[in-house]
Every structure is written in C-alpha cells, then in structure tokens.
Image 1 (cartoon, rainbow, N blue to C red):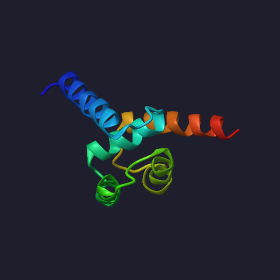
Image 2: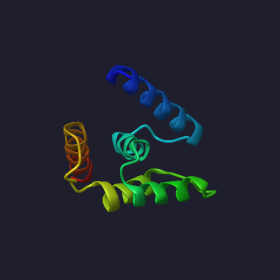
Image 3: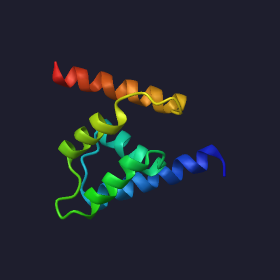
Image 4: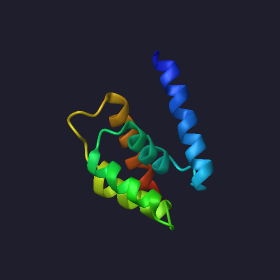
Length: 98
C-alpha cells in the first residue's frame, strides 16, 4: 500500500471518528487521534479505549490530559513526521496559554 493511500485511509478514519464522537477538530485532537490509530503506545491506546467506552467519552479536556500524560515527550521511535507534528502542537499550546 502506498503512502498516499495510507494517508487517505487514515484521514477517512479520523474524519469519521470526529463526526461520530462529535469531536472538536483542533490540532491537538488530531494529534491525539493520529497517535491512537497509529497504535504504537499500548498504555495510551488502552486508556483511550476505556475513555471511548465511557458514557462521557472523549472531549477537549481529556485530549489535553492524554497529550500531557502520554504524548508530549519525544520518543526515540517517533518518526520525523511525529516529531514535527508534536513541535507544531507544542507551539500552538504555548501560544494559546500566553
């Protein structure tokens, strides 16, 4: 499967999930859900599954907490895309908190 096909399939998953869960399409939420679908962090994935099965589900506050707890720090196995995406999110968070 080519990279473009994978990216399109992933985008469809995200858009469908955001619509189904009524999720705010913020960059932070995109990053959280990108990492959820990427599936390379078992503890994060397990907590996200628990959240999605909870009646209250996912919201912006939960996304920020998950980001801070599981995703804000660099991981040695992160791709260049993951690192660039995280830098963008961190910059946006800093500007929003200023």
